[in-house]
Image (cartoon, rainbow, N blue to C red):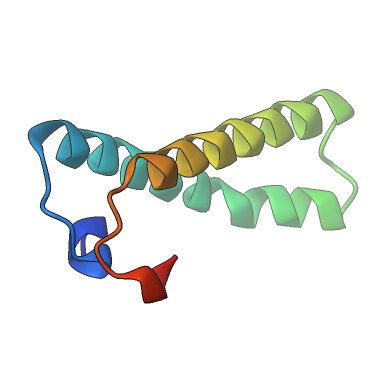
Length: 80
């Protein structure tokens, strides 16, 4: 698996590694739910409350990813 540190070239710290692993775990978890959510949306079988719940999860994940990106030390300006 490629880590964010390999991609951006920064030296990982223990906290960075933990945050990256948590982010990857969260992304994988959400990714596992997307096919079911899509199928239920297509069939109009996903209640509005569940749609909102999933939307909030995606928003939270997006904020986590943004925070993660903001905490990275860029060593290669071409990868901003």
